[in-house]
Image 1 (tube, rainbow, N blue to C red):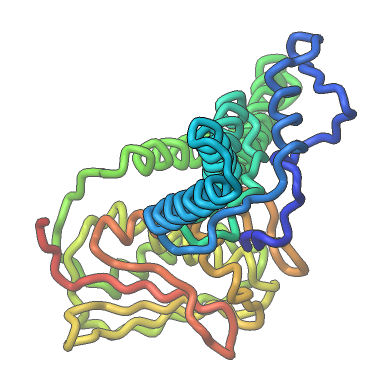
Image 2 (tube, rainbow, N blue to C red):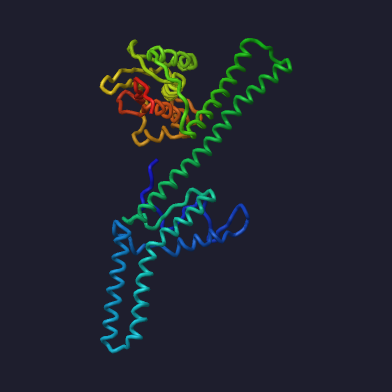
Length: 386
């Protein structure tokens, strides 16, 4: 997701999800929110930052002290020169020095005050808040303001994706459950008979439920950040054939040709269940985003110098924009559909694939290929315990 530039942000401190009038209204309590009024007043009252040109806050403070001291000295000298008493010149000089210090120190405090108010807004569930003052400065406060906005952007994205995922999961659960309920009610009422075809339809719906539950379990493992691996050595070509076979059966209605080009003597160590998740999700994604009657290529080779096995899954014709190649591996992100593609899913498949590869010390990425979208999977031949 492209992040907005600092200069593109409005001058106000907050960019709420819905437009508000000049009166801040709290929809939950049906009353005016004094905290929101204070935030709005602060954002409208402070729109400039008179300090922040240097790359170090220490240097800025040193310059501020030097300037205030120099001005105080010159004023004291001038006031004494014109004949004012020292008892009069001293408080005037101190007042001017304090005024200068206060004016310039506001530039340091204003962004911090905005961050405090923005953090309160995020604690209330509003992830659209942004810092608008100090983001163009070079000191530590400016760096903190930019990092805060990036964090808020990521949290807003995650919050939106989670909301979308809940809607997707609700839809995915409701469809097979409704179908199962209707089928079983028909069987119980005697409307339909328990024929092999009807029982197979019921079984297919239970498989859909099982797959969705497996996705959610994988998500919980991803959140935990670890999973146990059952490491064993196996023939890679046979493993891919076993992975592709059920996908070919499920894809029969789309007439895709899955072409496999793997040498028969490649041996690899890893957890077959986790690696099957990895390759099933990558190949399924290629099939889903390929037009009917097209080819999906799976080819693999050994890199003896690095001790890895490199696999490429290519679906011909479609391409993934360069700027979207990292986003598609984020959780809850669903690829755009188009002619010849299937919609639906939870947006977890590619994220789970990358997680499974990382468990083995490998990587999954999209590489440039004129033939089409090319997912390159790199796995170590031998598993090392860290």
